[in-house]
Length: 346
Image (cartoon, rainbow, N blue to C red):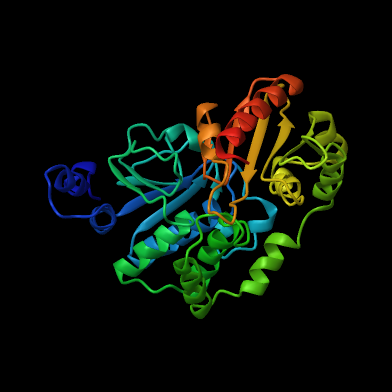
């Protein structure tokens, strides 16, 4: 097995001014090592799950040994993805590994996994709030999903994008663009989607699994959230909705049932920004923030707001957690959103 020292020449090459790009340095490290750990952030979404699975497939094609670990279980809508059963649910990891590949994390704490601290860290991210915390870092905010970066890595490695890999990567594309609705979409986004369909991804089947396979508990929770929907005035551009922990219990809902609820508030005509608040069992309040990109290309940058409050994300989709109670958290986030919307003229 290679040692962390034998892998780190790629890091040294960049630091020494060599012409390796971050992707080339990471590819060199992958070729040098033998055993890798792949993980992403806790409460994994479609981009996290699809990217972890595709990265695992890439590494196995390269002849490497791979473990994929997540602190939280894979949400039900993604459990039909090829290889999803191989993602191990754990709170602590044990080596030895030549490196851990962290996908769309702004730090080790985002994984909620213990045991990562002394490993060699390869950090791949596309969030505007990404941070260079690893020994190797590749952050490209122009990528529409971290899966897009995994796809680039696969092509550069000479590996085959199999139908199974294409399915996982198309899922990252579909979900992290909000069904091709969020800002940051380019012509290259659709070129990539086309390449993945040609490689074997079935867009209709994937969309059905993601958007038309909701558990009954989610629909009950959505009904409660929509009953709380409010906006700032009859034609206001800001909307919000919320659920309490008691609402979660009465609906029989789990955390993954909250995914996408905020989009119903954002879909209201005239609304430019929206927030969904959920009370956690311990009383803290988890927030999902969304905004629309206007015809002028401008939007409320919810990532900046979220980062100031200890969270992160994309310009049009972000999240954070605030102290409760609900009314206090609601006042804090609505005040922050109103200030930002005044600055942007929304």
